[in-house]
Length: 140
Image (tube, rainbow, N blue to C red; front, side):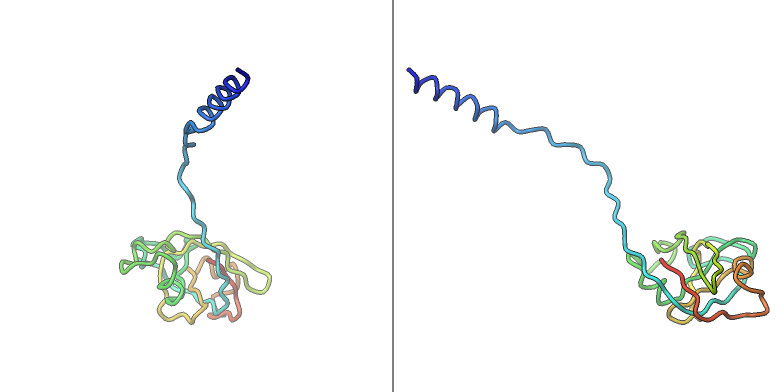
């Protein structure tokens, strides 16, 4: 009789223990890509219709990323309008000064780590008559 009750208890325990537990709901998963710091020249340009498909002007704090950075950004496609770099913000730092800009264009003339800023953004770092600033840093 003892063994019968013990067997019944073990069977009942196993029946409960092996029941499927409800699967928790999982929301969207955000994938973050580690940012890369670029060092290069900063120049300025007059924005217009950019590679990201939007029109900007010289008074906005926008920038064009160097073509090698723009073209190899994770998820980049043949259509530059769909490049995930578009709309990303970056802070450009030069000799203790910094400016935050939104990436809206591709800079084919910029060197590997270069970035082209709108005149308004460039003036936060130096006077426009400087033209080119060497050794600035930015991350994306």
